Length: 112
Length: 112
Image (tube, rainbow over all chains, first blue to last red; front, side):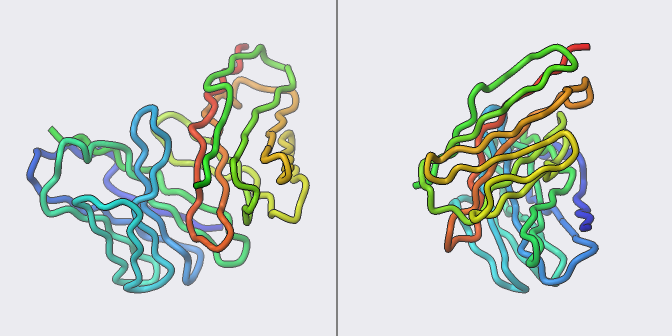
């Protein structure tokens, strides 16, 4: 099965600072990749998904962006963080064969 | 627009009981449905995936059923244990779309 590496586990950033969260996947090829945000009491919100290198679909317009420079690497970025960007960010990978979704351990982002 | 609802939001039962968690969805045109477990501050772990053509899936003490016509799925946990305490989320994959729509989850507590 897959292993999703996501770091850091926690991050505290000031408002207006940049952000880069990286996710790498082991144990599969050509997965569909996803970035979700989980805010307290609000469930999981899909931010971006990618079906291949350089292919990014955005679900929610905001000041975040995503990139997929390699098959098993997915990066979430922001040029200037807002207070509302605080939350628990989860990277996920979906196998093409059985379509199960595997999640990373998440990054708890606090924007102060 | 697909909406996924999980009721109750929280459930507390004594150890050893069998229990059922509920998930309902508004649009029956789904591709598959997954049940996940999430421990506090952690990522999600896929428990069971049911394709739209299937009625149920089993893994150990877990059994998930799917009734597309009524827009419902249940997760049955037999002989509950304190280690089963976690938040359980269901998610449906929409036909023709890449994304999953998640419910808000049921926070389950098993009391020793």
